[in-house]
Image (cartoon, rainbow, N blue to C red; front, top):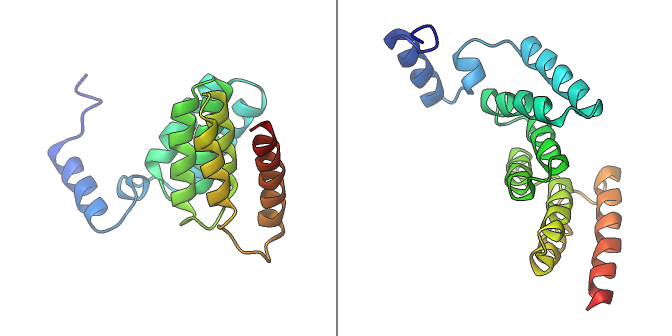
Length: 159
């Protein structure tokens, strides 16, 4: 058990690094290459349908570098696939924060989770909000907005 605990010196280094603005991964010396390798592992597990193990990898990555949008999206996607919709919404919100609200895509996925939870009104609010986000010049944003508008039209037609 003592092998898992940090020494006083390691803990001080971690806290000091975080207080100076470093991510947990940077503070403990995890290289970008290691993070990318872990991301590739998580992505491979996800695409093979092993959502539980992929979730573990993406959860760790989200702790090591909470500023990387891909890590939160991977975690959220796993949770959504595992029908953990509220947890997926939370991770999609963190993905949105990681992009400083410049990418509307996490809101679209969160809206789908809200619908799975029977929260149609909240889903409509999420869709309306995402339509205000992102650069109109970005083709990915345009595609996301079109999907959102189509979903919003369906929801509004249902009454």
